[in-house]
Image (cartoon, rainbow, N blue to C red; front, side):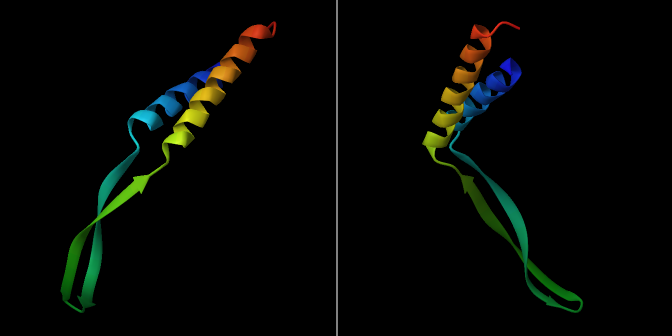
Amino acid sequence: MKTLGIILIIAGAAMLIWTGFSFTKKEKIIDAGPLEVSADKQERVTWPPYAGAILLVGGVVIVLLGKRRPA
């Protein structure tokens, strides 16, 4: 369980630092036989900062509860 808590802490901190990422996707506009026209489309994936805070707090709770219990 301690490992899961540490992973959640790292993921939560990363989500608080980086609120999203973007990537480029090729999209076909025209595909008529030998003629093909495509364009680059910018996509963005975002998440709210409170999602990172929830993961961070959850990870801390798991680590603290893991320390309390005898192994």
